[in-house]
Length: 149
Image 1 (tube, rainbow, N blue to C red):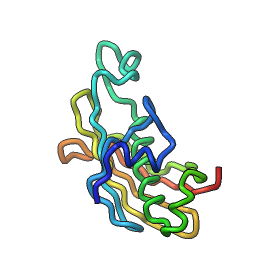
Image 2 (cartoon, helix red, strand yellow; image 1 turned 60 degrees about the horizontal axis):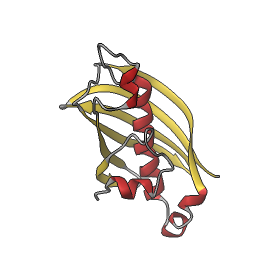
Image 3 (cartoon, rainbow, N blue to C red; image 1 turned 30 degrees about the horizontal axis):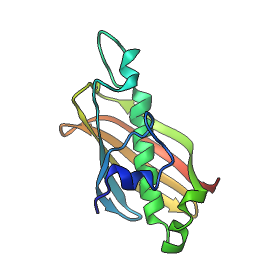
């Protein structure tokens, strides 16, 4: 399955400058998702992080993994439930085992690899990895829930 940014915006409420996933390249409902963000020097965050040494903030990497997980959760819902996607939102519950391995810089293609650890009802536990050029740059275990707005 392939989702472009327009299709992603139909699922997630995030918009520029906080929509952190450009494309979904692989999605297996209830199991996994792979998507990416092209990190550009024109990102507003680089005006202050850091002007002479641009590093993409770790918190933005984790948020990007969470957004990919949100797409996975919404696309895994039943067809009837997906019709109500505009009335739902994903809330973070926890971020555990978070580690940053390498800096992400302008020009990188930041891939999000998310696997379902556990799913029960509206609660999702996800294993997230952020990858650049085949190397894991960050990882975290994310817990989220889908709720009514």
